[in-house]
Image (cartoon, rainbow, N blue to C red; front, top):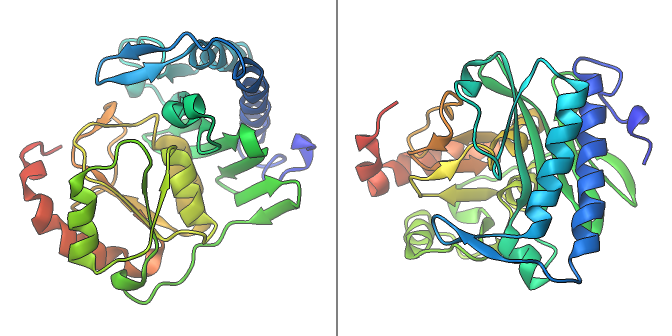
Length: 284
C-alpha cells in the first residue's frame, strides 16, 4: 500500500496520517511474527492479559511517534501516562493490541490503534487489523476510508430506520448480561461478537454493523480515540450512554459508550439512559 497516495495524505495532518499508518503496519508485522511463539502472557489489573507482542508493538509505535513529532505527548496502554499529558494541545493515544484475548486465541478480531487528540477532540485515527491486512483511517479533510487488498474505499454507515432493526456488535470476551438487557430494551435480535473496540466501531463506519453499546464505567480512551475519529468522519455518532461527548481530558469514560449509525442514535440514548441511570453518579 502506498501510504503517500492515501486520501488525506497531502492534506491537514497528512504527515501524521502517513506516520500512523506506517507505524501501525510495522507493529502489525512484529505482532504477527511473534504470534506463533511463546507470548509470555501476564495478567494486568482488571484481569486483562498483556503479552510480549503488546509491549513490542508499543515500543515500535511510541518510539516512532516520538522521533517524528518530538513536541507531542504520547500515551500508550502499556506505559505509565506522562503527567498532565491530556492537557497538551496534541496527544497521541495508542493501543498497541486492542483485543489481546482475540490475539492470544488466534482470532483475527484484534487491531493496532493510533489516534491523535488535538484541542481535546480526536482529529486522526488509524485502526489496523494485521491478521487480514485491513486498515481503517481518517483525517479532518481526508474523510474516513478503509484499505484492503481490494483497494481504498470511503466508509459509509448504513441507514437504519429504528433501533430494533440494528445489527449489534458486542464484545467477544467481555460480554455481560447488560448486553442482553440492551437487546431486550431495543428489540434487537442480530448480534456479532468481536474483540477489538476499534474493529467494532469501524464495522459500523463501513456499514457492516450498526450499533455498539458498552455499559461499563471503565472504558479507556486509548480504546476510543482512533475509532471515534474514523466513525465520526464516516458520518456515524459516538457518545456516552446519556448522549454527551466523550471527555478526552481524562483517561476513562465513566458513563459508558454508544456508537452507531447516525439515523437512530437519539432513539438508542432515549431508551438506554434510564436503564443505566446509576452511571450518572460520575458526572463530568
